[in-house]
Image (cartoon, rainbow, N blue to C red; front, side, top):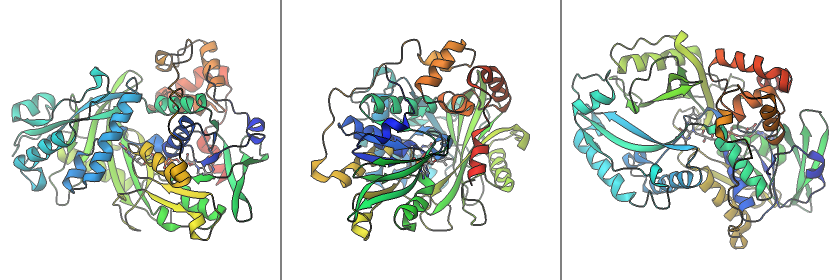
Length: 492
Ligand SMILES: Cc1cc2nc3c(=O)[nH]c(=O)nc-3n(C[C@H](O)[C@H](O)[C@H](O)COP(=O)(O)OP(=O)(O)OC[C@H]3O[C@@H](n4cnc5c(N)ncnc54)[C@H](O)[C@@H]3O)c2cc1C
């Protein structure tokens, strides 16, 4: 049985091979990649696992069609290969998502240009289905007629329509379970993972890393963990963490804001639709049919904006004016759509690394700092990535930087563990479970607060009304703990 036990004393008395700071998808993938190769990693997360940027993603596992537009072929190949990794390892949690872009003969979205891009996409991703379960195979892409577009997307603006382009990507229908399954796998392979444990300082000896001082944010007690390697994968906080442990490297992360909206509206189409309002310099948005607590909804994203320095760094919530602009863009793109602020159930916001300070344009590549080579302690590394989709690849590349040619291969025995007895995915669909099942999840999956269970072991609270019901239903079993947002505000 694989249990994520929050045993800080045991972690303190173990010599780890590396310590990973940050339990977002980058830190989780790094921990998993290290454990699968026979290392003993320790993951420290200051809040709950997957509660930061990763929780707010649009949940698309990109194949990289968009990178063909900028001729970034390397990024395209990386995305295709990582999408296949997700399909191969997690076919139960990553589904095939048909995508449609209505075409109006504007710029690169001309029918002829888009058709060529789709053909190149198919030719360059011939191996996209190798080793993937048959029901997760991605079909060929192609151009479709106006009638076909209107059948899938009845509200399409038919004025000037020149048919559409259709392709396929991956979608994480339950990203909470995906991260938990990666963590279970890592622990099964030998990792230790601790949530609510914040890295506070580095310990060194003769200029080399010895370990990390950390604080248990539940009890307030200080702890010392040992390892000769520390990797800072703290997402938006990675510059601050680098500064605490050694010195700031601003090139790691220049913040920009990005957000998605969960909208109380019937799906606009039977597939994901790429929408571009007919406005100068219009952005392209993705609108996905979504389901929350059994109800049909719309998930729309992603809106990007420059970061304003006068805002608290830990709160990426966008200004209301940006939310209004996003809704207006969607209303402009779809005739008759009259979305208003009260339709927005949830704003999923996060910080992403920008190409340059003060812009909304997301960086194209991950950034690594080997602190030992920059006059810092040997054995300290920092990494910051751009996409959920490529987090595993960046983890592998990070391990190459850390261990060089000595990097071990995967151990064949370290395969993904089967679901816990009695806890198949059906149990996570609704909070209407027996108290025993809830207690088992809580004890096996390091649940500290009620929010952990509602938002990050399952997805029972996306709809605020359902969140209140879930809190009421579960507080007797888990205890009525304060919302974890309030804990963060206390600590800020
Ligand atoms: C709105 C939005 C939509 C997106 N959509 C997509 C998409 O559809 N597809 C895609 O591929 N990508 C998408 N992305 C990008 C993707 O979500 C991010 O690249 C990814 O989640 C970043 O993960 P991370 O682990 O670096 O950061 P985070 O998830 O923020 O994790 C960093 C963690 O470090 C922890 N931490 C900080 N300081 C400490 C400390 N001192 N000690 C211990 N822990 C610490 C934090 O608490 C946090 O949990 C989207 C991003 C956003 C914001």
